[in-house]
Image (cartoon, rainbow, N blue to C red; front, side, top):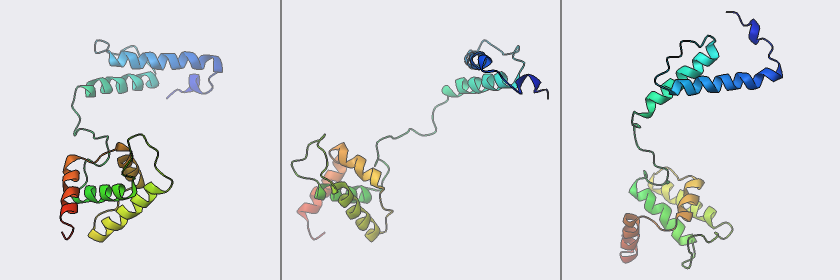
Length: 154
């Protein structure tokens, strides 16, 4: 392997080298280009990576991504977290209001204690924070919380 031309690269050539690598990537995204005239391994590698990315765009994801937190929790854990949030949040709270200092931490501590009491993994602080600011719990959680308030012995 002859690396002599790439041992020391003057600063004035770096911009041209970066442009050549960007060009190789753009050529790799083009399905009509076969990249036969790329002689160095760096542009060849960029070409192949871009070609693979272009091929993989057409294949669907293995599972849809769920960005909102709390979608994959067990129902009981979801209820526990929202019960803690609603117990620490003011009834006059509106979406966009700032949380009083320490209230999200108290809700998190309550949720952790309740989850550990029933043998569930405790929620992360970030999860409680995101759910707090989401505003309202999902309909199934609201129904479960209303059922608890109607049947306090259950």
